[in-house]
Length: 328
Image (tube, rainbow, N blue to C red; front, top):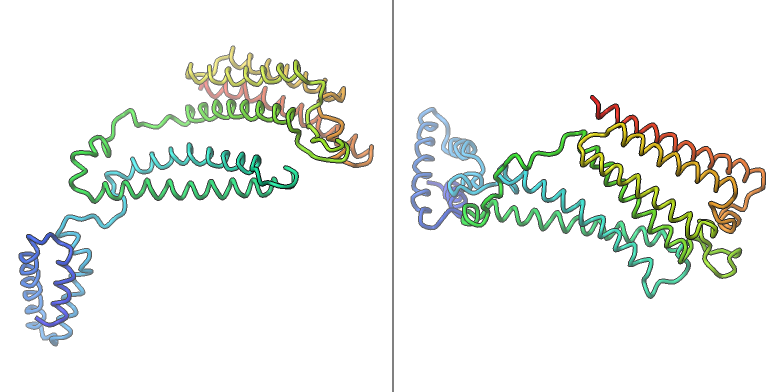
């Protein structure tokens, strides 16, 4: 046996258990010798035959993994589905909260200087950076745990009981149910954002400008507080609850569609009345953010009114669209 063959045998048996290493090395040497004899008998030169035999045997690391029953993949098919489900779930839960925490931390930082409007880019950038960092950490640690589980033969039959075992409870929702759940989640997220915004707007405002004489300028008109704000939030909550009821019942009924359309229509009509009366958006906000000629402001006002009506019409249409989809 040449030095090249010795190197190959040592590389192929280096990571196998010590108790069986000598037997595997002897078996491998015998196999190489048999193949080498066949090639030499066929007329191949020694060096050519030797390299050809080792090339056919392949990478010694792969051969060693076969001898020791050691996986050469990071996450194998047995645990891949569990790894994927857990990773996606944690990313959906942890990353948004990390981004929100980063944004709040940037907004209320003690050492922060300047106006919130001037710092908004830094706040968003910090939140995105924190979210990406958290996502990387979640992916790394979840993958590391499953990689260890994949390779530790002692863990698999004992501590990993149930992992890698499928049952019907793990079946995903149908496309229609996923869409319904997404609508419900979006409704309650919108309710939470709207509630947070109106109270933030009341307490801190959204713009800092000369018209406010040193104070933050709110976006919503002062006349909306407290009753119009309460009505708006109540209509938003009612819309979210109607969607939740449809999801619980597993179908979108005519009654739910009508109720959703009525809530939307009432909200749209009230918003348009307040908008036309000039009691929806704070006048100081318009003067500071939109210092444009009166004619241009009138055009913008008409455009905003069309947008409000358009959103209301689309929401009413969507309520009955879901009814048609549910009836199929």
